[in-house]
Image (cartoon, rainbow, N blue to C red; front, side, top):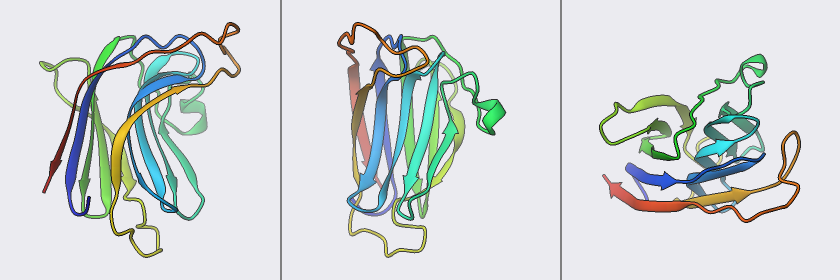
Amino acid sequence: MTGDFTAETEVTENPRFSYQGAGLVIGADNYGYIRLERAYGDTGGITFEYYRDDGKYIQVDYAFTTAEAKGRKLVRTDATTVQLRLKRTGGTVTASWRESATADWQQLGQAPTPGSSGNPAPASISAGLSVLNRAQPPKGDPQKAPFTASFDYANLTCG
């Protein structure tokens, strides 16, 4: 897709090990990605991160208790169902989340659209759903059990 858009989903999951998460991802081949997830690092929370086309990896919000000591925000939640939204306006993507349809959206931060860090912009950007189950310290799953996420809806509004 090209131009402005809003990607939104509702995901139900119960992440318990480092690192598990599920949510939204946007990106383009050779231009980086942006990911927004309900996750578990060493606590339950929301992860918002991006990888730029110039090779820089940025963690804006992270589900680790050490986030604030590393200059990131810790957005903590134990909710098993959350709504996530990535909204692109021009060269910027804004991430937001909420625990239910009746709650107000909480803005997390912004990231540059893939391809906006000096390289020519890609012809189009893809949006999709992500599910990650990567056992690792500090609290990786010793049993390497399956991790399941259910998406109630995924909406993409262009323009």
